[in-house]
Length: 199
Image (cartoon, rainbow, N blue to C red; front, side, top):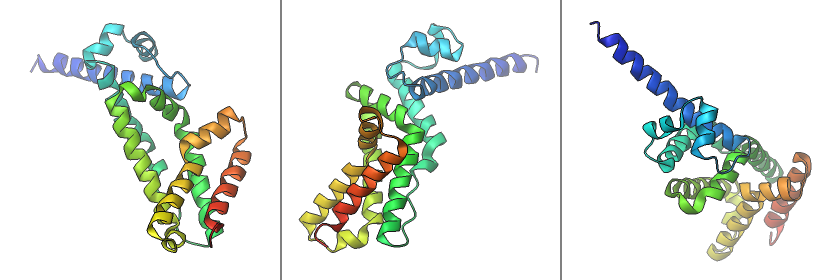
């Protein structure tokens, strides 16, 4: 019995340090640090740099853990918008959902895109996220899309998703320096125009 407590204590401390490392990289992403190195991650976590690689065999393994932790924290943000109501109400709901999602994960999403080329984990994550959000557009505007022939339906679906994707919001908020309200107006105008065209 006397040997259990020290072992449990070490395991608990190791688990705490591992979680600290994961949340350190997430906090650095959230603050706009797009490529934090092991030294910065260790400093933020309050552990030694060697501890980072004691818990994770490489940065890719850490990124995998961070993606899983981010999903646990933010998955509710990816819930589909309310799908009932008029077209105007559905457009407003979709735009607000995307703005809220950008507010929550915009910086982390930017970091994911920057690190995308060398990270299989981020490549998988971004593909899954894009598919999920595109499917939500298809559901939100199923009535309008259903009136088109198959080829036009796919083009319209891609156009709407392009208009309100996180990358487009990034362009409007950061590159164009628009306010949240101005961004809402631009995206709403674009989606309305796309849905109206040909009806």
